[in-house]
Amino acid sequence: MDLEKTIYYSSLFNIYGELLTQKQQKIIESYVFNNLSLGEIAENFNISRQAVLDSVNKACMQLNNYEEKLHILKNNINIKKLLENVKNNVTNNKLKKEILELINNL
Image (cartoon, rainbow, N blue to C red):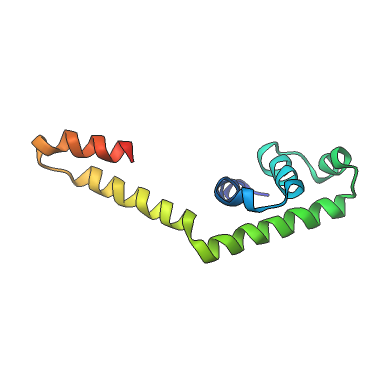
């Protein structure tokens, strides 16, 4: 899994991970967060490499489905962009400090 996908799936896992089975959670944590190979995970869970791959693929598909329906990650990214735009465009010095503090607290 390349870096971009790793970041994407770790973000989805942080949001929707609790919706996966415990076994899927442990396998995804091993694969995405601990960067273990399919063989290492298979050995740790006493299952085949194919079973690990199937579990990873199924879990990733579920995470994608949750995001397609709920858009939490997409909305979080959009909110962060909007807050950065507001932060960069605040011009009134009197309010600037208060607004920046509110944005940072969000």
